[in-house]
Amino acid sequence: MSALDDEVEDLGKIASAAPVLTPAGTAGTPDADGAGGVLGRAYRALTLGIVTVVLLIAFEATAVGTAMPVAADRLDGVALYAFAFSAYFTTSLLGMVASGQWCDRSGPLAPLAVGIGSFAVGLLLSGTATVMWVFVLGRAVQGIGGGLVIVALYVTVSRAYPERLRPTVMAAFAASWVIPSVVGPLISGTVTEQFGWRWVFLGIPVLVVLPIAAMLPPLRRAASGPPPGEPRPVDRRLLRLAVAISLGAGLLQYAGQDLRWISLVPAAAGAALMVPAALGLLPRGTFRAARGLPTVVLMRGIAAGAFVVAESFVPLMLVTQRGLTVTMAGLALAAGGATWALGSWVQSRPAMDGHRETLVRIGMVVVTAGIAATPLVLVEAVPVWIAAVAQAAGCFGMGMVISSTSVLLLKLSRPEEAGANSAALQLSDGLSNVVLLAACGAAFAGLGGGAVSVVGHGAGEAGAAASASHPAAFLAVYLPAAAVALVGALVAGRLRPGK
Image: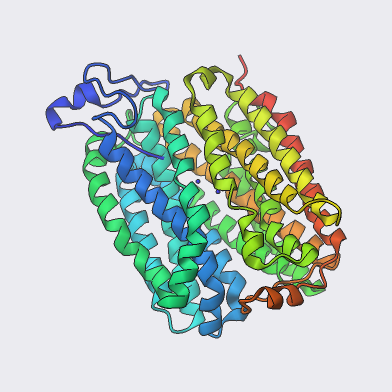
């Protein structure tokens, strides 16, 4: 579940309109020009441009998942279906680290532009593929672009917006996911049926042109160039660690998809690559929850990993255990986009600014309750709508947690470290996803979990393919996920830096 900059009317007003970064990493407010909020004249074009980019990326994330089964079927590549997802994730890790280095050296403009371009090229590769391996290659190129963009957006927020506006910007990002999460699958399904799956991939690059045109001029004026002070040299060691962690993540995902004894070999190799790389890429003290920034990074991974694992199995559980159609099961997640945005809006209120740690703790308690309540629908007497309510509640908590940790990270980062720290935040998010999904997925399969057919389009086909799923297999997913979320609620007290 994943930044911005500001605008001035002309070059002569830059000194008064643009935020002034201080050595402590905070930004002055543009009082002289009456910039106002994120939609004031000094920030309006940049805010609208970047939020539109986020909106289109969100639509791509929801739409591509809907079209993917048909694409794999048409390309005779169902055997490589999982790699179409894992390719994006593994290369995005590399893109995140590279973007952090790039931003800290020369600013966010270049990595943002290259990232958007790479994302579009990846979509074009996948949309024009005639064989599955080219399709997977396109997804890998998309991942590099996505990793570059998400970190560059966070750095843009830190450099272009004053600290008082950053919570509002993060809330705007969360709101950008509401419409795509509700209508994205419907639009994608309609386009796939009426025009073909390729247009789901080929249509998005065209739509990105206008927001880029609106965004780049104010971005160039407000946040281009290196950060204050001496530019940080490129750390080739970190880039090598990024390659290692990407390869390790890919091996771990491969092992989790093939439950045989021989799969222990790639699993062990993946762990051997990932563990030392993670220790080198994340802030020192992350895994022991050291106060301040390390706990912020750890908390992001705890929250994202626990919730993504739980959310991923909701449709499958409702189809196989309660007999819902695939469409109806998907609608159980529809309200989540709105409640996530609501949670992010709550944390953006000025009165909440001094209570970040409390917001995160409350949010994690709500997330834990939502995850724990979801598998209650395994009991026949429990109404199915309980799952939708539980997921909506969890999304509300996640809205508070994700936006608050983003704000805390920027607040605790010096200007010259914003790129590296933003990359670490996103790495923690991604790593927890792959580790928990691989572990819970293996437990799910080992306890009798079935697999939904990726080529069947009817509810009956999906239900038949997954009818072997045992209720205990779902408990093997939700109980560990709830336990991880509860740990997050306990660790939240260490978000405040030590004196």
